[in-house]
Amino acid sequence: MQKYPFQINTKILKLTAEISELVGHMSTLNEAARSPQLRRNNRIKTIYSSLAIEQNTLSMEQVTAVLSGKRVFAPPKDIAEVQNAYEIYDRMEELNPYSVDDLLSAHAVMMKGLRDDAGEFRTRPVGVVDSQGNILHFGTLPAYVPQLIADLLEWTEHNDNPMLIKSCVFHYEFELIHPFSDGNGRIGRLWQTLMLSKWNPLFAWIPVESIIHDRQSEYYRAINESNQAADSTKFIEFMLSAIKSALLEVADVSQLPLKPKAEIREQTVLGYLSKHDEISNSDVRKLLSVSAATANRVLNDMGDRGLIYRFRKGKSWAYKRI
Image (tube, rainbow, N blue to C red; front, side):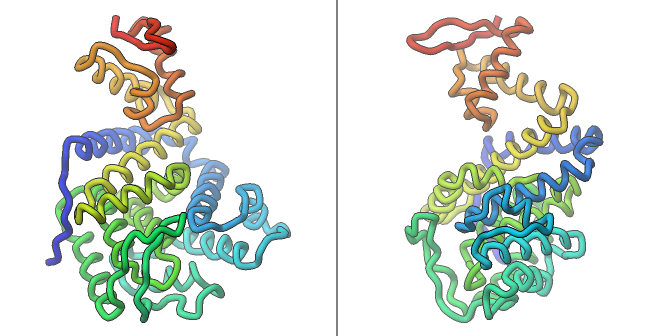
């Protein structure tokens, strides 16, 4: 069986454990996450974000209007991309994540009316570029694409590593092969979501694509660093961080109890302080993959509860354990 190089390091193990704990709590406490309105909102965020990465010009409000059947003044191509993406995301439950035929069918829907070769592997060489037009690498020669995709799907189905890790490896290797003339990014992100949703249905409604959109430069940098290392470790680290952030965002919106949201963050901060004398807002942002405002809220809440205390360090604040 084909081998795909990557290393399971301490960071990957830590992120995998944290995500698994979050998923476990959210699976039992996610009545709010089952709300049709929340699911629809998350699906809209997913579609908007995945297409925005590919330079679709529609705003979140316009995407919402299109999916509500309202008239939107925008390029017909961009409107068609939204409609196509919604259709295939809505049909995810029908798809087998390890089927080449289903992969081609999904591409046919995603690129319907946009490409003459929708639903077909590319027949010409292609260069892969980032959002600024910089060449990241050249895709696999077209003659090898069908077999490489079949091998990748077989490996993902049968390899013994956790699905969280395998889905990231698939995503990276899929983009490396670049099997289609267009739509590879959106299909790769869809397919990782599909794989994760078969592992746990919660992932069908977690807008991981939204985090990728927010960190688009990091997304491409992780791909580029993995390309240079000929090893997908950096990409796995990035994607697991994005998945964790997406779960925490949904936990916030769903107003879940303490355990999956505040306590996990709290434990992470206290764990850091068990090895370091102090912690800053910047440290918390990196640890928890959150915004500066959220990091500040976490630190203030812990201070109010008597777990840490704040002191002035230069022009900013730092925190120590009491």
